[in-house]
Length: 95
Image (cartoon, rainbow, N blue to C red; front, side):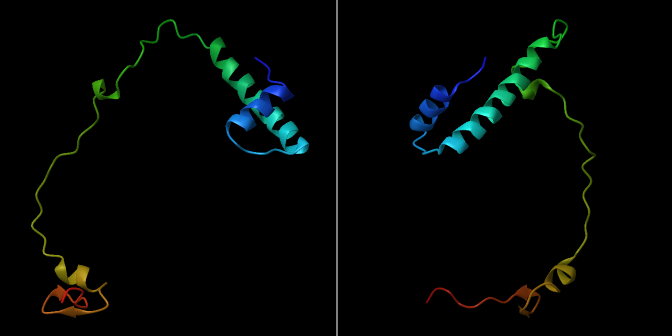
């Protein structure tokens, strides 16, 4: 399917954008190259490929859930600009 200048102008009007003649020609060239690429997908043999309707049917690898008892509050608080008694100190925002 090839687009022409009239189709590009109609698309621009529907999208409520204004295009100069040069922009319309550039867009026409780009849109036609995109459509050519999409048409190449029709050449791919997909006879033995089962359609995928939902990604949730796929099984994802899972890592082992291991609990770690690490007190890293000192490491976290070293990034804080102001700390008080092991907590982040922030200015009062509600009176």
